Image 1 (tube, rainbow, N blue to C red):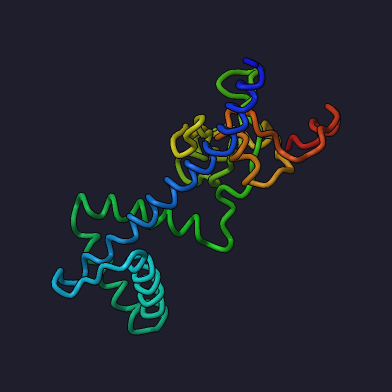
Image 2 (image 1 turned 60 degrees about the vertical axis):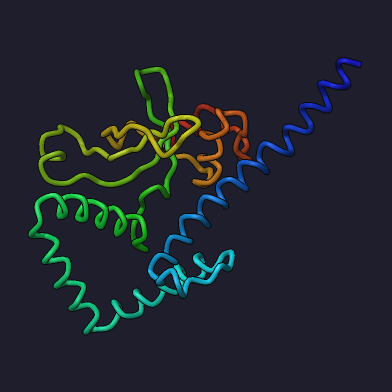
Length: 207
């Protein structure tokens, strides 16, 4: 009887845990998007669920349409120049803007290549993601060509560590980014749908 109850408990948790987590994330996103309703005076603010999300989408699309034309682009440049003169604001705004440009650029390779690196020490392997190709002083002061890699923590992949790894020491993985991220979030329980390869094949991925 105890084994039967245990199976029922595990089966129920396998259904409700991912469902509950998904609903919490969706609720968080919708509540975040609903903050755009604050742009409307409270007297005229309608009490319609999801209206804030729709308004946020329209606001983003409208802003993009304006910024994409010549006049709107000049206004954006002028605004950024003004923000660049404010000490604290220019640091925060400039960093976030560069991050957004890197992630959303069609030519960007950030977080589009999961890899294996020997971290935190030689002989131990961690799943990481290539985030960039460092230039300037960082690259000039390294003896070899290095890549900027992000090692996410488990089960929260939004935090992690930035490590500079020689390009020849990384192993590029064939799995998609989504599967690699699921592997990290699930504490390694959810394995990627990729057939294991022989050691010789894995070694050939070293650059």
